[in-house]
Length: 216
Image (cartoon, rainbow, N blue to C red; front, side):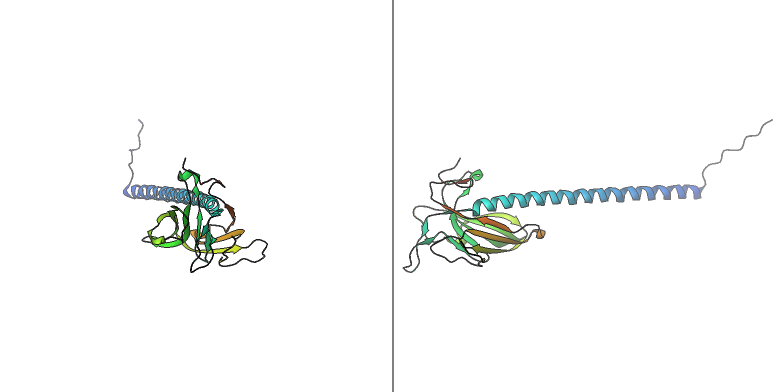
C-alpha cells in the first residue's frame, strides 16, 4: 500500500517573498519605461530645436541679405541716407518679405529682442512702405512676428567693403555694409553666429526669394 505525501500550499512567508520579488520586477520595468520615455522626449526636443534653428537661420539669411536701394530722407537738412540703420542690439532697414509669406512690396523692418509674459523673444517688426520712403516708423505701432522664444539678447556687427575690422554700429549714410554678423544669446547656446552678405537692389528686382513686386 503506497502513501502519497500531502499537497503542501505556499506558506505566508513564501507568498510575501514572491510578492516582494514581483513588486521589484515591476518597479524595475517602470523605471526602465520612464527612462525610455525621458530619452525619447529629450531626443524629440533636440529634433524640434534643431528644426527651429535651421528654419530661423534660413529666414534671417533671406531677410537680412537684401536692402532696398531707396534712400531715407535726411534729418535736419541732411542729405538722404541708405535704408539701413545698424545698432549694436537691433537692426532696422527697408527690405522685402520672403516669398512664402505671400506678401509683396517694400517694408520697414526691425530685428530686436522684446520682453514677453513668458520671457524674451526675437521679434521682427514690420510696416509696409506706402508712397515715398519716409523716416523709420513708430516701431511700437508696427506689426510684430515672434521668431523665437528664449532669446536673451542680440549682438550685431558690421563689415564695410574692403575693411578688415568689424564695427559695433553702422552709421554710414552713403553706403551699406558688405556683411552683417549676428550673435544670438539664449536658445541654449545652440544658435551659431550668422554672417550674411548684404545685397542692394531696386523695387523692381528680386533677390534671394524676396517678393518685391507683388504677392503670389
